[in-house]
Length: 398
Image (cartoon, rainbow, N blue to C red; front, side, top):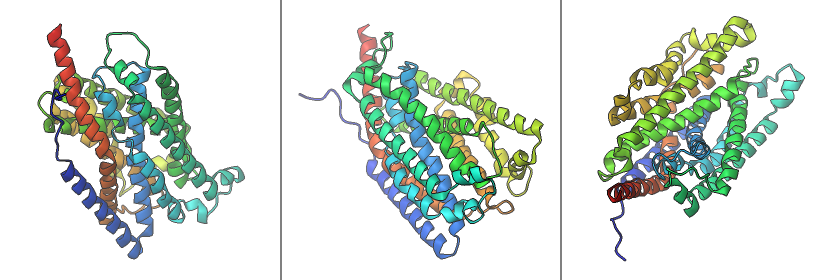
């Protein structure tokens, strides 16, 4: 039978070429940095980029689980495929975590200078820490693979396209979505304390884990919105991303979770401020009030909260592709900046090591991320067009 429409044809070869070039740049950056004796810069940047890109991929799967848990069916299957488009980077992140193992001596200061507290010293044991984090990533990879497989089943897709019913999601989804969401919160709380907080082992905050996985969740929403706005122009005119309602919903998600992020940020800060304990305040003071980290630190709330809050306050900006895409891109830059200022000042408090090494390695990770996302983006392109045709046919029929 003749298909009702032609397959979506985009320049996937060009995107693959760009990703490949970026990967080569990253490999050269790592090799040159190590050859020039800049091992600490290389491995700290490796950790920053791993957490950033792995967070987007994993956060996207968590967002998809959230759609199921809240019965969010406002764009057919399109927003589910959009959230899951990046998940293939997760298996690669398991391999890339080995770079953290290789550079552990340059990343974790307590390896060369063990902490005095015997209980904390047991927890901050390199073999124990690296093993449990590797296992946590592996568990999240398996859960994400199983969840995405179920989400793409015919039964789940049929449920996506029945927004006017009150039917619950398919049984397998009702089992796996809560499990994935809970494990996501646990795993990224673990990563926050092991891979970020432990670099300054004297510092502690009981809200840090919660705050960090909320940040990762928001970064995935920004990546989804930016991707949607880029694909909107590349796809045929009749696609889901050309609909104001879909753009409005994406904008509302950026706006709402930005406010939630700022709430958690202030809740964490105010307790440290009125406690005024040196073991807590040094982490904040060194980043917010100490040169050369002040500018990069204060850019974080500007990009993650002030910009989305002020720009996306009204309905028209949320529906305007250029505005929504720009705010989402700035949000992603802000989250990368946040990871950088959380990690690097712990080992370089008086110097800002931001140059070609960091840019090259970040380019390499971006290339690997794009390369892994291409299959998901191809599926997203098809679904965004087919969902638009289906809803148009339904509207014409009614």
